[in-house]
Image: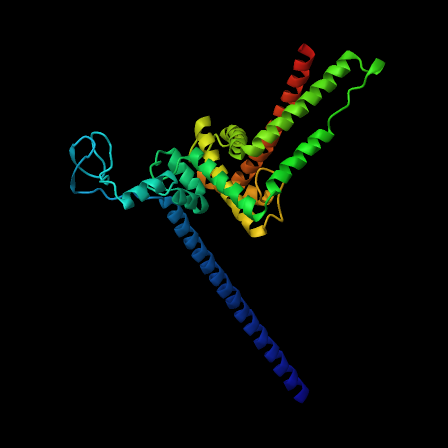
Length: 343
C-alpha cells in the first residue's frame, strides 16, 4: 500500500507538472508573438512617418501682403514678385549685404539653393527628382549646372586627398589600350583584307585613346554621355511605372543627370573617407554594390514599384547599359575598319 501511494503521488505530480507546462508555454509563445507584432507595427509606423517626411518636399514661401513698387517698371503690386516684369520684391539699393547675396546666388546659395538640392538628393532622391519633373523646379538648382559644380568639387577633393589617383587610372587604361595594338605584317602574309582589318583596329584604338584623354579633362561630359545611355535604357525598363508611366527620353535624361550628381557627391565622400585607398576603376569611386544600392533607392522612390521588382529592374538597367556600351564599341570598331578600307 505504501508503494502504491508513492506511485499515485508521483503520477499526480507528473500530471500536474505537464498541465503547468502546457498551460505556461502557450502563454509564453503568445506573449512573444504579441510583442513581436507590436514591434513590427512600431517599425511600420516609423517607416510610414519617414516616408511621409520624404514625400513632403519643399513648401512654398508665404505670400507677402505688403504693397511694393517695382524698381524696374514702377508697377505697384502686392506679393513677392512684380506682376508685370517678374522682378522680386526684395530688390533694393545696392548694399554690401545685397551684393553678397547676389554673389552667393551665382554659386547656388540663393533661392535655388545648391546645398538644399544636394541634401534632398541624399534623403529623398527619387521624390525630389519626381518633384522636379512634375514642375516644382523653383526651389532646386539646375541639374546640368549642378553636375558640373559637383564634378569640380569631386576633382578638387580627389586632388587634395588622393593626388594623382584619377590621372593614374586614366593612364593605366590608355596604356592597356596601347598594349593591344597589333603590328601589321609585311610581305606575302599581309594580304589586303587582313591589312584593312588590322589597320582599322589600330585606328579604333587610337581614336579610343584620344576620347579617353578628352574625358580625363572633361569628366562631367563623360558622365552626361554615360547617363544618356542610362536614360535610354531606363525609359524602356520603367515604362510601366505605377507613378510615372511612359516617361519620355528628356525626362529620363534629367532624372539621370540628377542621379549622376548624387553619385558624384557620394564618390567624393568615399574618397575623403578612404583616402583614395579603395579606388574603383570605373566612373565612380565606390564599390559596385553601393552603386547598385543607390540606384535601387532612387528608382524605388521615383518609379514606385515594389522592392523585388525595383531590384530586378535596376539589375536590368545595369545589364542593358553594359550591353549597349558593348554594342556601340563593336559598331565603332566596324566603322573604323570600313572607313580604313574605303580610304
